[in-house]
Length: 104
Image (cartoon, rainbow, N blue to C red; front, side, top):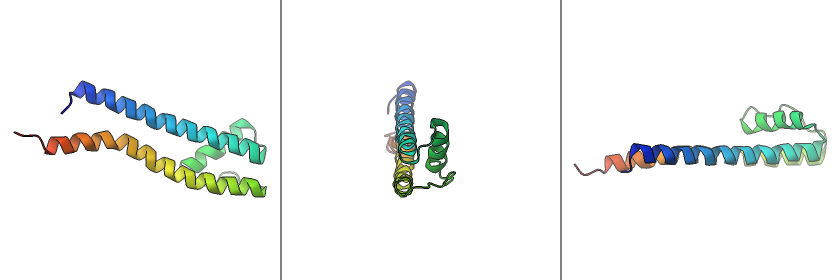
């Protein structure tokens, strides 16, 4: 099993990767809201964050293209949530499984 210091480095890397995935996802959401609904950046950020976090729609899209974007972005956000959770939990479960299989 790797040392605690190496495990902390691995966890930091995984947390950074998960954060990068969330930031990229929010960037795509903000860009989509700004393009399809002509929202100002701050309003688009709030709309993207509420949708990504699972709170639902904070602003109902008025255009058909905006409604289609929000529908697809909502599905995408669900997958981002699953991927982010997996990225963070995987090293901990991996270490736990190694601990179970240590020879005494």
